[in-house]
Length: 472
Ligand code: SAH
Ligand code: SF4
Ligand code: F3S
Image 1: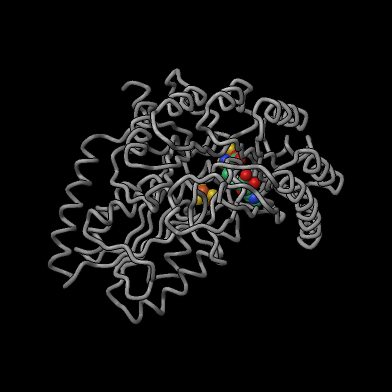
Image 2: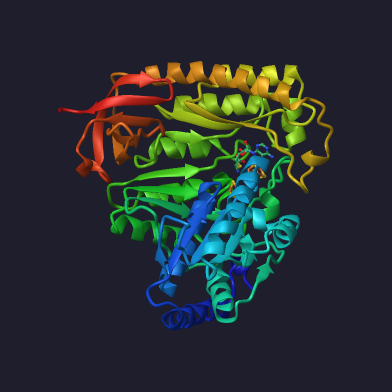
């Protein structure tokens, strides 16, 4: 087999799943008086959101109608996340709540999938403590959903499918996109970095890129269908094209998508500092459709902690990189993720993180308290600092970032941005984001949703902006 096809599933498997879709649609006609209802709920990152769009696509082909409520659904699917304990607790809470709902609606099928379910100890806990769950399946077999639905409906089978493996790439799965103007476009799956705190490489398998031709084709189809924003997704998009080796890199992918004719913007996440090159930053600067935004998690401002995290760069390298980025890309906004309270982190280490945050001028930052994940290296490390102490550090860091963000948004007042109008806010204003991914609200008719408008910033409110339509 050519290396490039290493992760592709055999053609027979695709054909088999198509047959299951047919079988389910016939079965549905005999089992349900009207089209059955499916409720799909997604936890976690955009990668999971994109997976749920495949789940929904397959369900629609089978004959389900998608609904927004659990109550009275015939099929409930929770696509779960394992990144922190809190994420898992929420899933357990919500699954627990299904018990009573299912007691009132006995024919309801409950299926759990996603990152959390790829872990054997979780599947075991579900089997023991949540016996009303019908099916559990892992991340590597998402494309077999039609088969799972069939087995569950036809035979009332209860089962758990979480095969180990490096993971697969499945093309041509039916998709049901949540939006008709904003699209997620996964360009790669999995992760090879094994940051010592992180569960992703264990639950998502090895890093594998989709073929450039498949990605570009999908981007072209999206633009043709009128999509205005395409977000390229991967845990480390900067290493796109390396596994399998296509002799092709992320900068080239950006350029080729940028060259597609049409009025749209390109976003991407997540970038990894160890693989983010100056050439890539220059490429972003030269691509007019690529948003002026870089999500570049640094995780810690201490070299000692970065090493223990296995991140593969130093604070100095990170700072040089963002200095270069700010110079190369005018009006760039950088956002980041950071972990507070990594095992063995001292207050001195934490202060180095605070220093970096003061200098880096992030427009926003996601701050997380370390959460031990079973099977990861960090879960084995000594972790003497109390949760209360970590919470104090967490609050301290938030307040530092709050003033940095306030300064950054204040710099935008008076500037005009081309904004994709996305939704109506609670206060009745139209909401969109600047190229730098800062939320901006402004009065406008609802008919602007899905279109680009020029908006002048009139006011900054720490994390978000207020504005008015230019010339109105
Ligand atoms: N691939 C991305 C991050 C994906 S997870 C990257 O490398 O940047 C999103 C964020 O969750 C991470 O950036 C990290 O800040 C946080 N995170 C991951 N594992 C965590 C853990 N065990 N405890 C606390 N935060 C964690
Ligand atoms: Fe997790 Fe690190 Fe991979 Fe990001 S790069 S998904 S933090 S292992
Ligand atoms: Fe969560 Fe899996 Fe994404 S663990 S953050 S849903 S890759």
